[in-house]
Image (tube, rainbow, N blue to C red; front, top):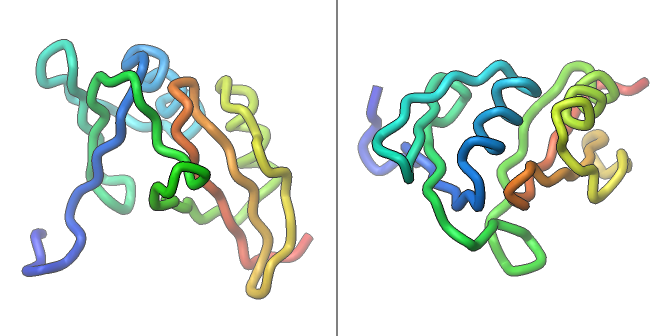
Length: 119
């Protein structure tokens, strides 16, 4: 459902669409729909979006917005991210309201995962 003047879609650059798709499929079970050789889309993941072929990447160090996943099992999600080829760039740390970690996927885009569940 599209809601008037609400965030509806997000797009990320990808240096390698094949590796990016494989990572998200393996780590989070995502499915993709390809729209030509330079664009792929995902849906049903809390926010629909896509990846476009580019030599850039999204990182907070460069001022990009940070998209954050929620997990009821932070350590389990961290293991899935690592097993799928993601790189943890900020190990699990506590902050007011919970714990989280940051990672990059194979094309270098930064994401975070948080949990409000204590270990």
